[in-house]
Image 1 (spheres, rainbow, N blue to C red):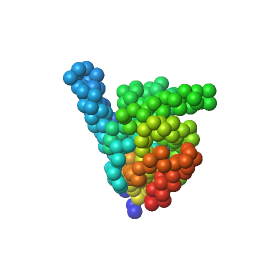
Image 2 (tube, helix red, strand yellow):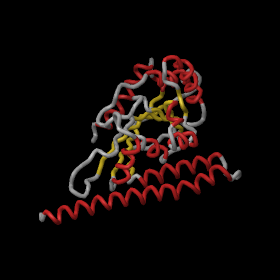
Image 3 (spheres, one colour):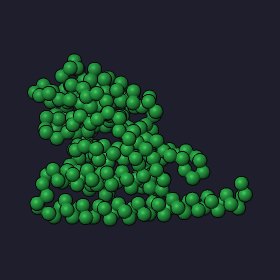
Image 4 (cartoon, one colour):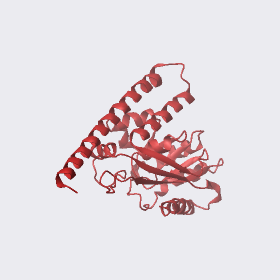
Length: 263
């Protein structure tokens, strides 16, 4: 390839990526503002309609991130347990069904993200040992309510190639709730796949791990042309069928890991 043409092509490609990112940001703003007005200021909007607004907003954010969702299996309208790869997990899963997410309490104070997390009725918990008993009690109540919740029991995001050991306290709440009613949990595996860029290279774009700052990572996602996320819904598990939280955790880990191995 002619060197001059190569540099021209590469500069053109980089320019297109910046334009793509800026257009996506503007598109997200244009969609978000009227939805916020509708959500906040129109009293005739019912609770279910507000949930629909949240789901539509989630779906819009997935679209602006360049992701295409491919579902395997079906959501069973029960509580969810998922592996955690990126902040995009939330709009991906939230666009597919009505669900409240469980998050660490510090997310509530994050600029912009914290605001939208509160708007989506996120359940914030203190994960320190000092607050362990109170947050298990809180989650037990949430498991017993009519709204489905989603937990990311790894406690942090990963590269998506494997899972970390699950936090047992999150499952103790489900076991406590199952003493008084039938509680089902559906394991879900998320697999993100990046499409090739302009130069035939493959990049790790979507996974958000380690000390990678949020805004630079989000900028890389917005510049990326496209990608796919496989959402694999496994068979729902009846919590009362398990002797203890250790066996319940093992069943969820096995199911979610089996989905990762399909990649």
